[in-house]
Image (cartoon, rainbow, N blue to C red; front, side, top):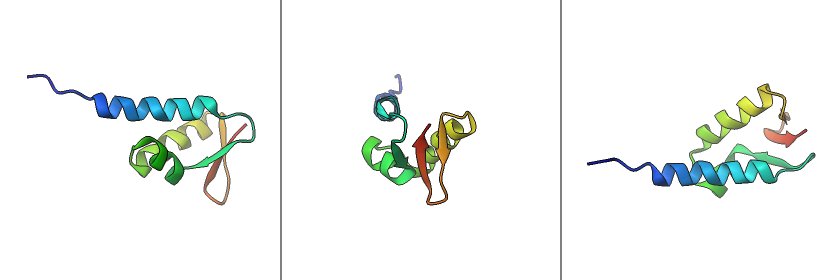
Length: 68
């Protein structure tokens, strides 16, 4: 019996599409990303934080992430 991760894979695909669609100046909060993708908010926050550390997003004080 194999275990399918299809729902999780689909959710990460939705997050990837959301992030790829962002243009400079676009912003998103972890809560919004979670609502749009079906992933847990802490998971979205971890991805967004990682992208901010990599310099692809900036993290504002109001807890929104902005595409740079």
